[in-house]
Length: 137
Image 1 (cartoon, rainbow, N blue to C red):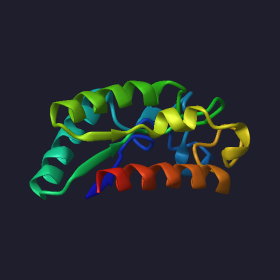
Image 2 (image 1 turned 60 degrees about the vertical axis):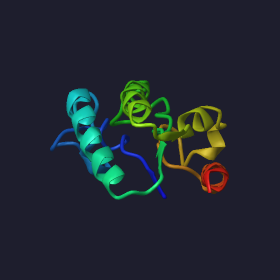
Image 3 (image 1 turned 180 degrees about the horizontal axis):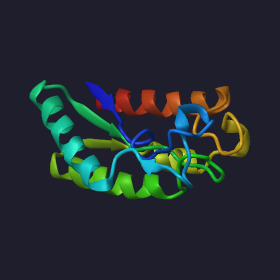
């Protein structure tokens, strides 16, 4: 079984002069991976994973909170729609981590505008992943 995701790094805007971690800068930066390239890349990855013969589970990309310095709110929704189309075409199950994280209170995030999680957020994410995988097993 392979539980996989690609998304948050793809939707990051980067600029070489940015002082932010990872050179993130959604004002002056360029998106890391265009939607067209994301779809092409994800199709290739899905084919490789299918060839491995494992049961596949796609984890949707988690919420981009307001104030994230290198990502626009809502870009994850657009990229999740691309991924959903590919997963549906390939009969791959989807673990909707975006829906889960969209309900998280602010204290579940590592900080304001941060795509990372505090221990409570990580615990809730882990619980959903375990529950989803357990059902499939």
